[in-house]
Length: 75
Image 1: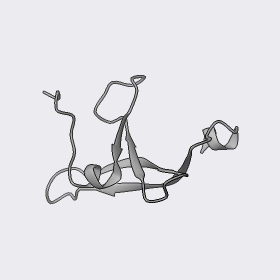
Image 2: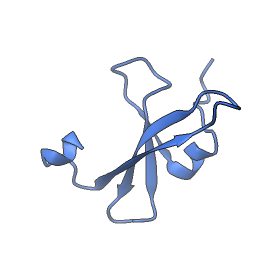
Image 3: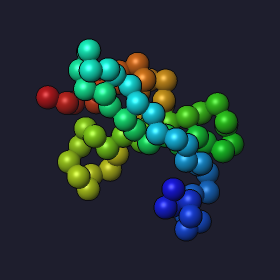
Image 4: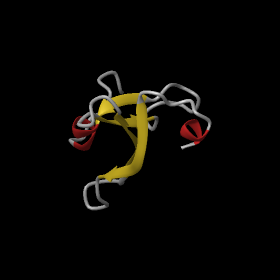
């Protein structure tokens, strides 16, 4: 929202955050979401949880993220 407020987003629009997972199966996990303005059906999770603070986030199609995506190189 800060990037949008300062006019720094041109091709994407921020959406409400999303959450997946439940306490029954593990910890819930939330992510920011953006949709591509030219292709309204394209929504992406912007997820920095898998990396150390300050590292770039993973940008994943939202459907894939909701299906439990994790980076392949995660140990």
